[in-house]
Length: 300
Ligand SMILES: Cc1cc2nc3c(=O)[nH]c(=O)nc-3n(C[C@H](O)[C@H](O)[C@H](O)COP(=O)(O)OP(=O)(O)OC[C@H]3O[C@@H](n4cnc5c(N)ncnc54)[C@H](O)[C@@H]3O)c2cc1C
Image (cartoon, rainbow, N blue to C red; front, side, top):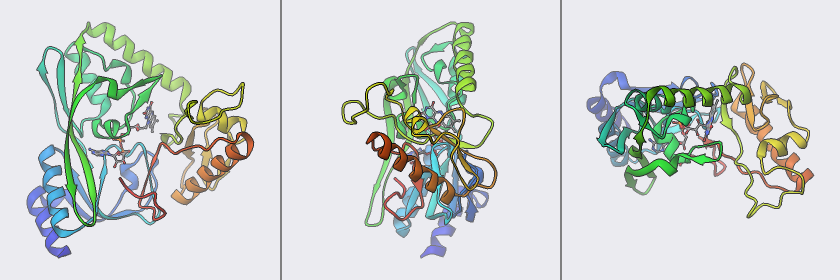
């Protein structure tokens, strides 16, 4: 069954787009983690659909990966097939609507909109990852959610005994008209803000924890409702496990200082959670997605 599965995948997508025991670290911004049993490189919605169908027929579990900028891949890797969705196009559907394939990077989308005088997405400049990943996690920046701009998303859903996957294939965004130079200025300001506030020189996966929600989390008076502030005030800024470190620039980032393992990162995450709970009674919830862990933090 499994051999047949690989043959079918290669026939559908091409030999060079299907790999066995493929290291995932290069496909993540953390630059760590183990291998995928199978890695499929999908560029377009059709590739994703076909790969999902073949995996479903063979009963092989599926994990979707976009830019790998919001995941921690376990040191033991990910069983089954990882479909990396990368590439595709943006097109104008009407004066106020554009469609982007899931594998388009957010930066590519922003460049496209600015070049075409479409306003709305420029402040998202500098957000790592793809349209699919941004929709999956509802990416946020300075109090805004990417979902505010999404009119519609095309999903592929596969339900079977072994797996349940929803893959984002494309998304439509609402846009206005804008002057390219003015849009570019907003994009530059976002990039400068990121440079000032995020440790962009080291591999990371962005914010590790969601910010606490004042409507369900009891945050002590005088402490901002920010996961980074809680980690910082719990005395964990700069804390280390192996080569993983809580960033000195932004305490909600963990950086890989070179050779960190997923185990190092998990330990550091646990220390942050324990420290914040002990000090402030607040339970931090992860924003990053754990892939390949067998403690319930598995893929989608
Ligand atoms: C330096 C840095 C800065 C960051 N800044 C921000 C920020 O300002 N705001 C913010 O919200 N995030 C930020 N992030 C996190 C990350 O960039 C976003 O969460 C991004 O949207 C993730 O997209 P991705 O394609 O990399 O997803 P991945 O990391 O590849 O995947 C994340 C999740 O989405 C799922 N997924 C990916 N593609 C698909 C698809 N096509 N269909 C279904 N599921 C899919 C994956 O299975 C996984 O569960 C930052 C990260 C870094 C490294």
